[in-house]
Image (cartoon, rainbow, N blue to C red; front, side, top):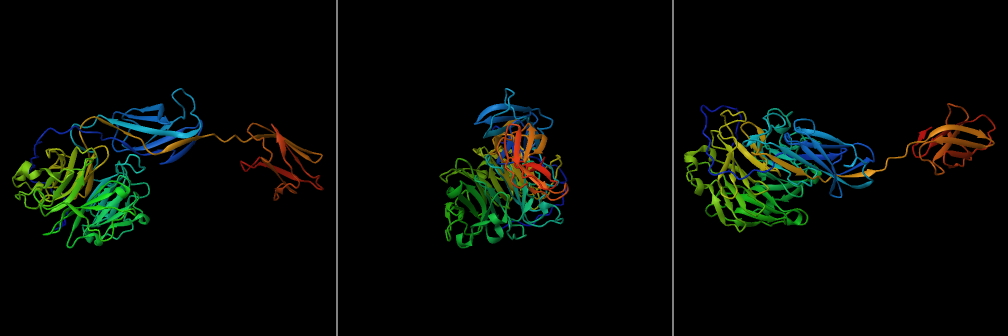
Length: 559
């Protein structure tokens, strides 16, 4: 019941494939350019800067901010300074950017001491006239057998915008990270994560086209991945996919007899986390099954879940994936190969599990034997609940596509790669996974090309990111004093200096040696006292020539 192996020859279609017309006017689009990986002086969470010094504010833009970037400096949530970056230049480019703040408020004064400073960054763009691909089919966008893609949507996370892509089979060139079984870790612009771009998470994956499978990222920064080689067991990691963070959440103990679980969909956080799975077992599918996570992050042993949407029209025996929007509505896809089969490929249920719409009722014969409706592989709903993305593998001819539907009505909003490649040429596609970021960009994996892509919705847009990083302004250390003279008379060593702050007895130590190049030790009997500009130490009268060195204890440097 699982998908067959698909090669990627890149063969062009003999003639252009006609795209489906839009059924209804598209809902209004929302933001697509945004800042992520925001750091202050190189720190993601807590930074320091000396009062009066410049502060570096760095960030990654997922695409160019053609209408510029606005950076607000805040003290206790009140804007005290605004930095404006014009579009088209440094600070507004796709990828890594750095803007320098001089540490002053809007009045030109250096800000005061304290740990109450933060930033917010608003990126703006004129956008595109239509849904537009913003990536290309080259490294790091390559993935040999992509089966899952997800983006961190938590704006308060230091990993906001991180993209996880699952690859389930080794490619021909293992020097390419995306050709290795496991998971790609990428920033919002597609660059590799700072700690490394690939991980297995310390798990032995099947390397069999099904393992790793679908991936979801929860609102509390956990990565959930399906190992479909084991009938759908679920594992969880932190955002770095470190082996130490691996947790076995759903195991074979949680399966009803004969089940075959695709998914997952993750709703909620902590002990309020719900996992939804789609049981594709034939002929005894349970439909959509609900699991509740316990305090330790796993599901109770032998908890076989609760079927919530059973097999009954419009849902039939092949639910392949499930997504849930912010209002609790369900979107389910079915894996049907026969394009004349009237069973729906995509369907919506409300939060009470009642059918709302399905593609069979809306589109009847599904395009009159249109192969692009075959094998619906994955479904994802955007955070606002406006759009639903569905990745269709297509029939054996490789004419798959990713479609965007109106979540409320099921109307087709866009066909992202229907019969076209990213250069507008007719070609083959086999889409296997899809997902959304927090600002309305859709992501999908075209397995025919062996690449994942990001697509921006149409329209001018802007997005504000308020990262968790905070800044503490600290006092600059006092400058070291400058010694102007010293003398030894009648057993008293006198040290004169100017500048700096050195008024506490003991700030200076005196070392002595019998030779200028010898080993220096503390001068016997030293008793440093002092006031402003003068330090004195009592030194026993030497019975031979002595050489002295003075160093400041705080700076630990010879003077």
